[in-house]
Length: 357
Image 1 (cartoon, rainbow, N blue to C red):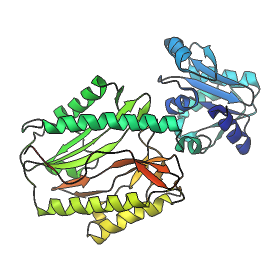
Image 2: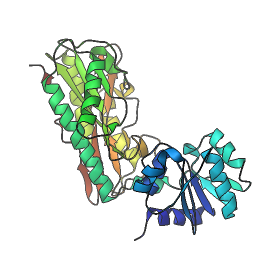
Image 3: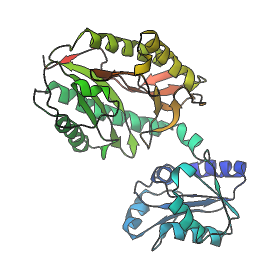
Image 4: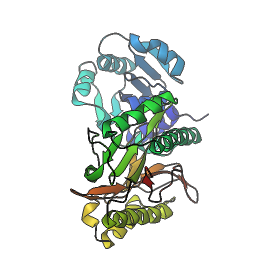
């Protein structure tokens, strides 16, 4: 069976390199199946070697497929450099976005050949998900949505943002996830105008906006979802206006997602609707991003993206409107591009809902 290692070897031949080296947990998981935090991978036309230290020997033996396993002592970047030297590779590709200057220097201390930054050596391969990857991300989304459905039914005045975020993350683990995909966002009232608000000690009050952005990690893959509610009563006509404008923009963008569609064009559909509604300056982030082993992956849906959607890509569609000092709305779904459009993996209702009534 044609493997991910074979696909990587094909990319190496195309960029004129004899080997590939990686210390990235995400890349190494994708290539080998290993879900630990520290490892090194070296791949040539004839060798695929996985290096780990003593802490991960047993875990690697149970998770890694397709590689020769080697336990190594000391600095793993130096050991990888030594391995590259022993294999006689004249040029080695690495992902510049996933290797630090310090790691590169350690490799250079043991390897004197050419180290070539190749940004696209792995990224295009990871963008298109396999059926198993799609199924795992779908399951992660279903788990997280189950937590949302249960927790919002029991919201009471006085709970703080921090307490609610903690409940999400507890329930993720209690229900079988390894944890949250990212720090859960729970933002009440005016604080919902912060796109990446950090939960604090603000207590929930009647008339508050409740913006929840969350996801869980299941079997090494992430989910991502945002829903915005009102608690007790609508905070004002302005909130209803921006909520319905955001929802319209999101639905129109979702209709446009499909194979062959430039990512910047999907972004523009939502952005134009929000701009025409008078809130263009209040939608300052991109429409979406890829999701997989990492919570933010390629492709990106934003005005500068050059990516084109293809079957198997999984992306978020998450327009938002944020009014400083008043509050904000974001509505986010996770979709997989199909042969003739997309499948929305997010099933949580999106119509404006008043909680606590």
